[in-house]
Image (cartoon, rainbow, N blue to C red):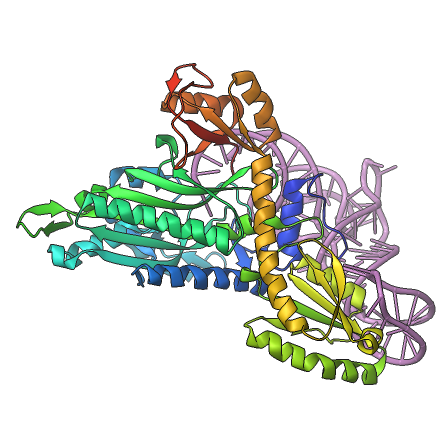
Amino acid sequence: MSKGLPKRSENYSEWYNELVKRADLAENSAVRGCMVIKPYGYSIWEKMQRALDDMFKETGHTNAYFPLFVPKSLFEAEEKNAEGFAKECAVVTHYRLKNNPEKPGTLMVDPDAKLEEELVVRPTSEAIIWSTYKNWIQSYRDLPILINQWANVVRWEMRTRMFLRTAEFLWQEGHTAHASSEEAIAETKQMLEVYATFAEEFMAVPVVKGFKSANERFAGAEETMCIEAMMQDGKALQAGTSHFLGQNFAKAFDVKFQSKEGKLDHVWGTSWGVSTRLMGALIMAHSDDNGLVLPPKLAPIHVVIVPIYKGEEDLATISETIKPIIKELKSYGITVKFDDSDAQRPGWKFAEYELKGVPVRMAIGMRDLQNGVIEVARRDTLSKETRPIEGIAAYVKDLLEEIQVNIYNKALNFRKENSFEVNTWDEFLEQIEKGGFLHCHWDGTSETEEKIKELTKATIRCIPLDAKEEEGTCILTGKPSGKRVIFARAY
RNA sequence: CGGGGUGUAGCGUAGCCCGGUAUCGCGUCUGCUUUGGGAGCAGAAGGUCGUCAGUUCGAAUCUGGCCACCCCGACCA
């Protein structure tokens, strides 16, 4: 392994690719467009899952699991949804292989084992789930249904990037059914809030909450809400979506319920999801040219302790001092690694743990021991200080909290510095090249959005929830507009 | 799927134009010295040169097919 990552400033995407590999998060696999998520990367994902799952449970949801395969006839039932995903579906057509008589030792698809009906590998599960909900729902007493599933999905992407866009990815998808439109809309908003809270409090990534424009809306939804984050290259990344499905899927799958008043009506639905793409967001939001920077709440290892010693005796002495500190740290729920391996020297370890984004590193040698001190280094600021050993565990506990806050603030400041109110088309053209979020007036039409995308590759990331009412004129057409939307180039 | 590029030891590479089975660095193993920011010296192991076919006495090198990855487009979370 050679040292040094590519520089963010020189080649952002190369920096990202290298970082993912070098920090042991993931690697390419033998399957085109699919990645192997390595243990270190997966443990970050597990932490995300845990936090999100707790929040889903807290808001009344339960987990279930639905099949990977969707019969084509079910898949096509909701027309817009089917259309939206048709171009990127993997399809199972056969159920058996056989020995290839032409080439001994190899297998071929058995032409006699053609499926009567093709199975679509789920790109999302609305179809299979709503076809099931039909059987579960008869009356208002059966509602609401609040289900989430953790699953893999497949979208046959032409161009893939680790975590950001892979042919197969892991996610969670919530699918709820309600007796009223109001309730479904409230659910849609609630889950968007859950995502925003998760992104900001756990990932330390500030997000803009908003509505998608019609162009960017989920196929089959009445309304799509999203959280958008800004990456360090000024590009936007959609970090999560929450959809109000109206009665679209209920109608497509004939899911009706009898109301208190005895009336028969279609059920109202929502769906919402976040994926392993969040890993990409996490990486690109905080990391630097030395490697990953992880927020303590998602870091697999919070603190690494590196002993600096000559010979077994020194190590034993240091270990004795360190033991109670480790114990105390663990009692605070802090994950500690005491790296006493002799295989690498301290300098190597320092670089390695920086690459992997461990939030706090402590180093201690005989000299420190005599002075009753220990060196504490922060990953987020790359600063070091010498602290008394006395009370160090409590200090580190507070430090981790401070790091979590600092990382968030850093990202928030970055976003502020790269968000602009843009009022003229010339300004727009100039600023979009530099990146960032461009808050602009827009005439509300898909045509205008399309045109802007064609000209600049920028799209409307969202219509922010907190956009203030303000008279203005569309950045491109000059037509009247009541509030600003966010334009940006996006991942 | 279009345009461009790359594929040689675990990783990164030289050699390819001008055919004669392979260079260097990192890592690995052994030993000694080391250990406060990616250690030093000495020795050693490790390669069907992406893959399949063709040309040739002989192919990493020339020709063709295929596969994978990267960059740029089109498509998308």
